[in-house]
Amino acid sequence: MKIKKEALTGIIIILAAVFGITAMYHLKRQSARNDIAARIAELMPRGGGPPSTIEDLKKAIALYEEKIELHVKDAAQTAVYWKILATRLQDRGLHNQALEALERAVYYAPEDAVLYYLSGLSAAKIAKNALDFSGNGDLTVQARHYALAEQSYLRAIALDERYLRPRYGLAILYVYELGRPAEAIPHLVKYLEISTVDTDAMFVLAAAYYMTEAYQDALDMYDRIIAATKDTTRKAKAEELKQAVLRAYYG
Image 1 (cartoon, helix red, strand yellow):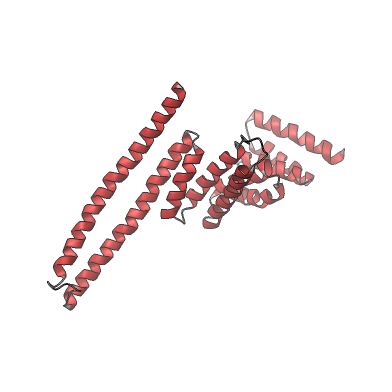
Image 2 (image 1 turned 135 degrees about the vertical axis):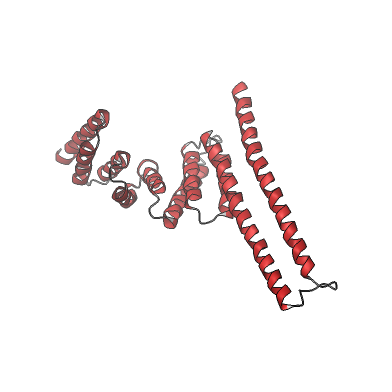
């Protein structure tokens, strides 16, 4: 009970901090918008309607453009605050709440690749930890979140082809969660073209090759790991897995 209370207190503090900063930011923005509105009103004739002179019309257009720019900046800043909240919630393992925050962030910044990567991360965590509490074999929650994780990673990659984290997350999903290793291979190959000495990615790619019976490719990848790493534990692990592939390859 004490642990739950402490966790709840932590969440409240996070929410208060994020939304407190947001409130102050929007208060300042509202003041700026009110100032612009007052300046526009000054240009209008007493009977209402648009400004009558060419000079006043130009001034009004400039002021309206300034007002629009404020709205654009507001949306961008709002997305940042939702992203901050989401990452804080992820740090505490609260992925359901993080996913809700990320949905709001995506609403304000629909082409931010990082938001989709973070969404994929939380969705995958939710799916992996999904339990059938009802006892009736209903695993739709798990399937839905795995699908969301895949879609989110793919969207992140579509927005930024050189963004490596979603490629790695997607590969983990395909190899270890969804049983679709062949689909992980092109993503890991692309990953290692950019990050050439990442042995974590090499291990996953070697596993994908092994699972698809591309034994020679798996052997080559383990050799690449052995050559790339100075970590004796990793070298030993790669040697051990290489021997397992050789046994499978030659019988």
